[in-house]
Amino acid sequence: MFDILETVSRWLGEGQQVSLATVVQTWGSAPRATGSKMAVTRDMALAGSVSGGCIEGAVVESALEGMEDGGARMLTFGVSDDEAWDVGLTCGGKISVFVEPLDTTWWSKVSPHVRQHRPATSISLLEGDQSGAKVLLGPGGGLEYRSELLDDSSVETMSRGANARSGRHEIEGLVVLVDQHRPGPRLIIIGGVHVAMPLQKFARELGFRVTLIDPRRVFATAERFPDVDEILHSYPDKALRQIGLDGDTWLAVLTHDPKIDDPALLTALPGPAPYVGVLSSPRTHRQRLKRLHAAGLTPEQTSRIHTPIGLEIGSSTPEEIALSIMAEIVSLRSGVNA
Image (tube, rainbow, N blue to C red; front, side, top):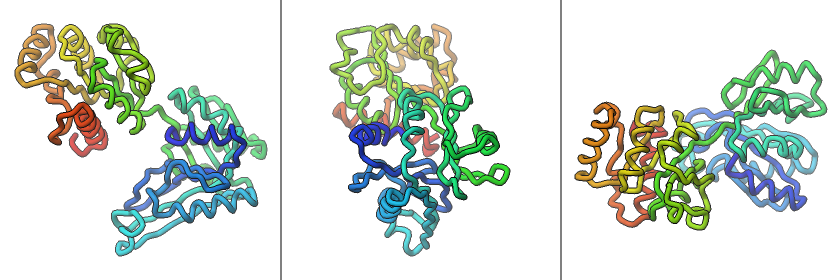
């Protein structure tokens, strides 16, 4: 939802009518995951995607019909193996998409959570006279919104889906769409160097929250890094402890300065971050390993360092190096090169 957030909010601010399409379920091969969204205006402006292009035309048609009659619709598309390539599936499969006029009150409640990367859960009825009716559970699980048509019993039943995975579920006779709004992955860039400038842009385009850490204020400025979520002007050991690391935090250590890089590595490598990449030459890295081991890290911990950073794609310019870094992170995150 983050990818359509600002566009849809702008449309609503302009007074435009909007429909929302959400991938509910997939079978076989599908180019977009459950929960993927596309928004449509009455004049057929689009934001987001539910299939990469193969069924968008039919979804837009259904969205326009929903704007006229106020009703929600479930669309299911099936594709044979022989037809799959023509419509964007790598092999035969099916995809179900729920299309509904946008509930603007729900949108106003959920948008701040998505924008500020706070967890929240939306649960929508998929069948019956109240199809499209929603509840929203906030970061602590408390009820923050309920459609007016829902009675207390339905709200209570739907809320039991709070911990379910995104997708279609049946809960005590109610067929619902559970839509988990979870914080996106986070990229932490150590060092406001030249490579970091295109890296911030690629990361944001891929849905990463981006934090830049550099005690050198002249390098880490908002003018140089307009796409990052935050800039911390402190040494990495202090900054990383301040913001915390988790299993979806990815680090790119770029300064070439041991006074900055080493504290980052000493803090990050014993922690849960799945990727710690370092921009350096083999000779520099050998010297670095000696320092890190003398400081108490084990060979097992330092073996987690990815250096030279990024996939080997023959990169040489800052933009190409940044691309190779994000390619390596995406491949590891998807399990391709885990």
